[in-house]
Amino acid sequence: QSFSENEIRMKPHSHQNEFIDSLAYARKFRLLDDRFGRAVNRLASLGLVDKFVKEELFRRVSRHRTQQALNGPFQLPQLRSGDFVLGNDIRGNQIRIPLSFLSGNKLSIATTGSGKTSRSYFNILQIAPKVQGLFLFDIRKREYVFLKPLLRRLGIDLLILPGRRLKLNVLQPPYKVDPRDWAPVIADGIIAVLGLPHRASKLVHATLLRLYHRFGVLNGRQHYPCTHDLFEAIKKEKSAHSQSRSAVLDHMEPILLSLGSVLRYRVGWSTRDLAKRQIAFELMGESQIAQNFIIDYLLRAEFTSRVSQGISNPSMFNLYIVFDEASRLLAPNAAASSVADMIGLIRGTGAVIDLSNQTGNITPHIFSNVVFKCVGRTGSASDRDLVARAMGLSNEQRNALPTLLRRPGLWLGQMGHGDWPFPFLFETPEMNVPRTDVVHEWLGDLESLPVEEATEYENWGIDDWGVASGEPLPADSPVVPASEQPNLSAKELRYLNAVIAHPGKPSSAYAKLAKMGLQAAQKLRKTLVENGFLKEHSVSTQRKGRPAIVLEPTKKATEAVKQATAEAEGEK
Image 1: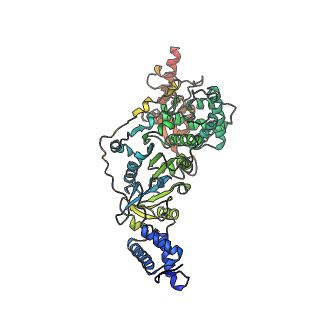
Image 2: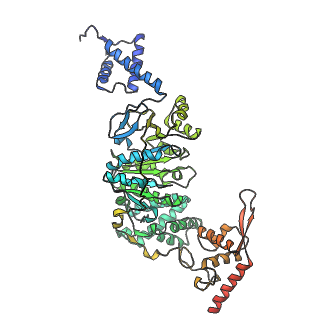
Image 3: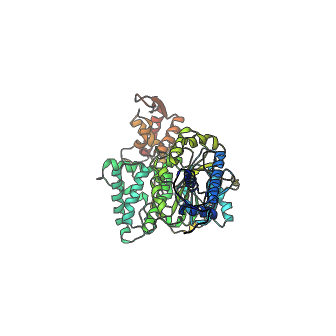
């Protein structure tokens, strides 16, 4: 080969160390990605370098190092192409990435007022037109209902679905899932949400298979048992392990009473139908365990269905799931969280979970299963230390966080996809979403989906005696029907009978003795104390802990019970 007089073949010697270091620096920070830069990189790879190539390389490296010295310890992201706008870098340049880079779970950590909701709005308005399904979960307050007018302009009808308007049957096998395969999956889910020992899962699994056989589900019949059937069947399993049986019943009953008609369906809405729609689930008014029960079923059923259909690691996601203020679901000491359990599994099925939380006090393996990490203004050093470890920040970068992340809308992010793994600063615009004309509910075409209600359980848990299972009280109970009581209701009399028969016990014990729910018993206790039927005494029953509230029946209570009993016997 022949070369011009300005060309030389690269030979390793001391004067070339600067060139090699500059070339490695340029490749690391993608300074040679343009057309001319690629030519410089190609010549350097072939060992053909002249004075012009060296000067161009040194110029680019020197300029980048100068910019970084002025911009702080974080690199300016070289993300300039794609169909999704992440925001602007600190120099005002737009950051764009391919939407496929978001095909992984995301986590945002920032205190109140840092712009989490505004950034969530910004992302949702871009992603919603490009995916088939959208699940927006309001856990603590109403946030996503205000997107309805904006999404309507994009041709998207956002359905507003309160938790109490759901129509679900968690025992109904999802689309393309065999009942025999669904039984152990949902049994494990119920046990995990209720926080029960693993042995109880065997009881739920076996009982559910018997119900499937009895209802003909194993033979192809689409008339499924509901959760109430499962409760009643377990209650009749007298030969089952007593502790497991009692634990399941004690934990299932409040869920069935709390959710009411939500679970009272033999055929409910399938997740396959829900995942084809854009829905804002409003779960603010539900208890934490009720929220997790609903969320666990929706995620577990959709994931199992997609696996059964053979969906695995698609190039693009089609279901975007967003949780606002998810601390209840992510905290390490919270009840078993379906989000924490499913986040590592659902990603490979074409669904993406986007989480936001106020603190870093979350289940540790959440960080291991999120592709895009994002942190805004934080209020504690422990949160910054946690983020620094998760992102691999240097000491200089960690120490700069309190100074840099001071204003709302400014974030430190790190991508798990693509060829830019370095943490970078970016800013999202403030979304001034109008908060007027709040829609209370908007079910759209959900009401037209076929369902079958278990009408025999319509009055389950609210019969005259208030017994959840519908069983009569013992024959020796002196309670009188409510219609024949002059002053007290049947529940009040039953509670008073329990206190009179077992005086001096802690107030929490009388819910079981009176055969009613704990919340109902607490309300009755307050009413009876205010009306002078009971007296409360604060007694320390243990060396440590708070003193217990011990109940004592008054003379008024004794006389009222005797009078009601005498009138009932005289009437008979």
